[in-house]
Length: 171
Image (cartoon, helix red, strand yellow):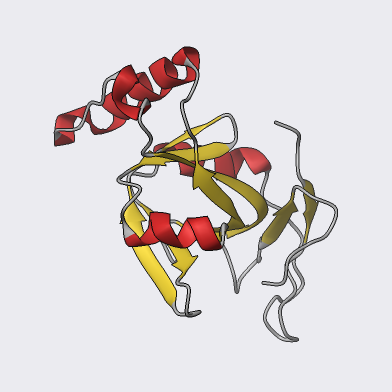
């Protein structure tokens, strides 16, 4: 995965007072890898938002998660792949904007890596998929384009924007 460009998020005057530090991309990768729950926000066909918590694994700079293609969020993705994804903390913040889609028929190698990673992460909670589980669909992948992260917002703010494509998205 290529490294993102790093800059400051655009906030109204007065929000970030004299920021001096940036967070490293490794901070975001660690938070994504360690998180148990991810909030996925899609858009319904009529424009209304839809949010749902997901279990998943951060692998190769993307979030992989599974579920029925008949769920509301999966049906939303067919019409509009633009999504936001964030972690649960309001203090150690990671907010991602990007696209999600169904990953049809993952390679055997990817399926094996995912099944192993998911089982290691969620096995104690009763979920350990087999590598062939996604042969008929039900595996999704989120790819970030713009990421916002911070651990300090007021004192010594470190709010950082990471951008993977040439045009930054509006926050």
